[in-house]
Amino acid sequence: MINNMNKLYKKSFGIVSLGCPKNTVDSEVLKGGLIKAGFVFNEVPEEAEVLIVNTCGFIGDAKEESIDTIMEAINLKTNGNVKKIIATGCLTERYTTELQKELVEVDRIFGVDSQDEIIRYLSDNRSHLDDIENIRKLITPDYSAYLKIAEGCDNKCSFCSIPIMRGSQISRSFESILSEAEYLQSIGVKEVILTAQDLTRYGTDLFGKRKLFELLDELLKRKYFHWVRIMYSNPDFWNSEIVGLFRKYPELCTYIDLPIQHASDRILQLMNRGKKQSEIWDIIKNLRNNVPNLALRTSVMVGFPTESEKDFDELLDFIGQVRFDRLGVFTYSEEEGTEAESLKDNISQEEKDRRQEMIMELQYDISSEFAQSKIGQDVEILIEGKNENKYFGRSIWDAPEVDCSVEVSAEKELKTGEFYKMKVTGTNEFDLVGTV
Image (cartoon, rainbow, N blue to C red; front, side, top):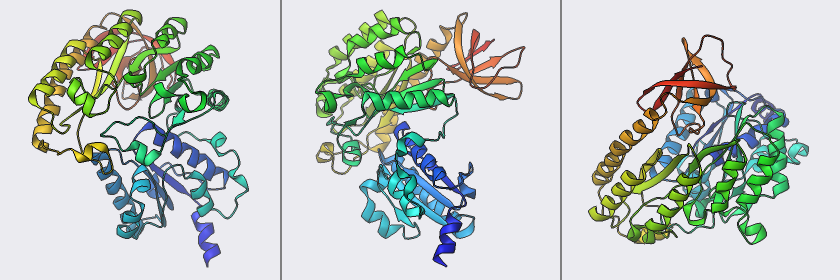
């Protein structure tokens, strides 16, 4: 009977991957390993017999989404095709014992970086586990992929639980990263997005100093990809030499994600961030002065413990002066085990939401202005699909999932995953509209 059940579980599997691009890469490695082990991937997770939920545990909303997804999986196990549920990822890494007690319908719970363990659990054939990182199968569109250059984080941001869940930084070697980049090129990837918990500290554990500049130079000189995009660049460790790479390599997207978190020096200090507002300003001015057509993205947090109206006004004024082209804003949620947990969370959720809304109202005008400034320009775009008689895609200033899109008209057929020049003729709020 047990052997028959094992055979049943090999028929199909599905993965629901939540959270950040690092989780996406982990899910893709797991997908490739299971396919190599003889399992069949089902594009519709709800119809698979083995359903894997790769959870996120970064902030309160992400935790809630992860739990809700697991509960949906349990419902499918009770009433649908699902025969086995596996939960993995950041949330399960941190709350393994609690989840095992509360979610008894889940067959097994694993932590982060558990691809080998999951495959061993589901398969009686273990010979396929060698070089698991080289058998990655994308769950993103086949023309765009993330390239994770490091795992974990050595930063000590007082609000962040990522080091608790993911551990200390472990940088990959140049050889490993470039080998995977070559593999991604070989399967047709045209846009690669470098990602890590903090790109800017890459290499400190391997070489004793930061090596993002050298890694980017080595990758870009190989001309593997049409676009190379960098995400999660902590301003505390930004290397100004990277600015020269934008002039040297047209493949490097004129797009930088520089999460500042706040602009009040008092709050930045409480957050254990290294740069003051004036120093962040200097980095931004250098970027804007030396990288033509740059789109600058950031993330900020409101409602951090003791954030006064004065602190919030400083943040609002800074955003208004800098005019980030892309911006995300989060409300603070207390995370167990972090340094900020010791601070009294003295700001109501209602007030946090009000401050978040005020920033988004300001950002609405800024992002609209950025889009309108592009009218009349020729812009390179990546086509991602078609909706009725219009194509849609992304510009060089838009990362997948988190930024804007482009609406495209064309007299000829356009191919998904290909790049075209588009004349910008208008905007739809933040989105560009144009014609090839």
